[in-house]
Image (cartoon, rainbow, N blue to C red; front, side, top):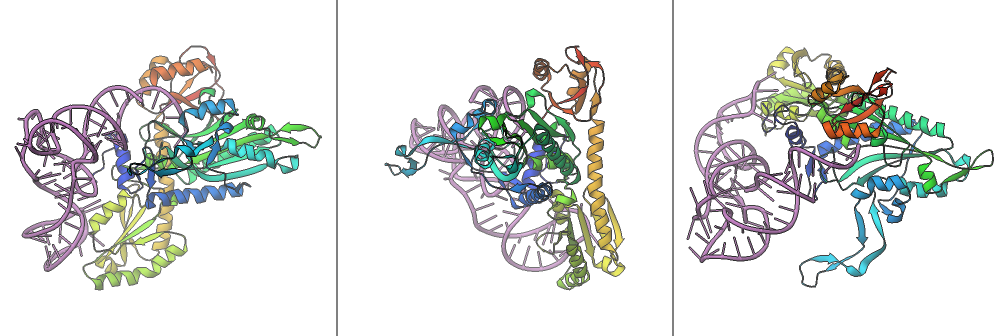
Amino acid sequence: MSKGITSRNDDYSEWYLDLVKRADLAENSAVRGCMVIKPYGYSIWEKMQRALDDKFKETGHVNAYFPLFIPKSYLSKEASHVEGFAKECAVVTHYRLKNAPDGSGVIVDPEAKLEEELIVRPTSETVIWSTYKNWVQSYRDLPLLINQWANVVRWEMRTRLFLRTAEFLWQEGHTAHATSEEAVAEAEQMLEVYAKFAEEWLALPVVRGVKTPNERFAGAVETYCIEAMMQDGKALQAGTSHFLGQNFAKAFDVQFLGKDNKLEHVWGTSWGVSTRLMGALIMAHSDDQGLVLPPKLAPIQVVIVPIFRNDEQLNAIYDRLEPIIKELKSKGISVKFDDSTAEKPGWKFAEYELRGVPVRMAIGARDLENGTTELARRDTKEKQVVSIDGIVETIQQLLEDIQQNIYNKALKFREENTFKVDTWEDFQEKIELGGFLLAHWDETSETEDQIKEATKATIRCIPLDSPEEEGVCVFSGKPSKRRVIFARAY
RNA sequence: CGGGGUGUAGCGUAGCCCGGUAUCGCGUCUGCUUUGGGAGCAGAAGGUCGUCAGUUCGAAUCUGGCCACCCCGACCA
């Protein structure tokens, strides 16, 4: 048993926190709700960023950067948007400090009050649309396909490392289009980019869907989302994409002259994923021994632990492995050869398991004689002794297997914890077990609120692929045309 | 922000009720033996007891304020 990690079964949220800390991903900072992302954790985020950024570029987007501060007046221009964010905004009121008269340190200089207070961005729609106003005059200026990587601040009451922090890192795409159809297509395209990324990189199966009005982004006409299931059966929104209609264009007066020589407001989208994906990654795959990372995102994909008594043995091992390490690296596989003498092999085994390194290769004097090595895979903990000849191909194959296997495992888990429910009694019973409940809903906000009140479950989404099916609402008994996903959520 | 809990060496903890300058384990350092699943023995270093104030001859211990974190709730990606 790993030292110092709470078991998932004993206390899921403690387990999660232990993992984040023990695997060296992040720690709390001096400021409440803010986190320090440590190098090991950040390198996973960097891999996510790179993969996503490539996908954004492939779909025609470019990066830009908009400021951290937003004039307070901007935020009030789109009514529902203000409504959504006003309660969690950090506000800058002064621009200078001075030494305290009593010598106790520095104080805010009351002389230095800002004329107009600045909001630390909780999201950038307002600054961006106020800028787009200047950039768009004619249909020839459209579409604008811009993304930015940035930090945002939402003053959350209750925070958890990665899942909900006061400051977090994300990307936010903001696009402007000449037609509604084109904007909807953009929002749907980016949702699919996120879904594929989640499935192929995070090895995380997701449900593509749309949010109900209750759960919709403040200021959007339609919110698309990908929803994933964590190992405790709770849902986690892993990404969102919004069709903004003309809401922000109207609020910020962004109009273009069409081919027909008529002025029209542009159509917008916005879409984002955040460092919350780190939380999803951790909670989806890991176990009581520590992290389980999909090979595509693992900072170290293969760790080699040499077993030796003296420098002579170590050198013999290294001589044998050097060309193999080079070859692995040339194939883009990240390898760590851990020849430190500070820890014993057994300690290293446990430590790399804790950090989720997908493949471990142990090699000692016996192996050198036999021309073998012991390969261990993190996901199943299976060990096998294999020939050193052809080891590079074996490892490549193993990494692919692991990526696929943890996806399959997560998918199986989700399927086993997704239930169709048709009665309110069944609903109340099953929701306690966790998981997704597929139930009919009468499409009213009131029903959704009452179900939330009674069970803490919300409608995670209306799946895009949910088939039409006649039924009656699980709560009100009114007619319904399709099932939606209910779950308790992060 | 409301209710509950916690804060003692790098980490995890005992001591607190019943006041007298702090226990143990891990880790660290030195030496030897070890090295295929978190090594053994011997020795050593390491503490503003979260913080500020109060009570007291004396505070980790009692009282109050503040800060941080955790759990539950409201809110949320």
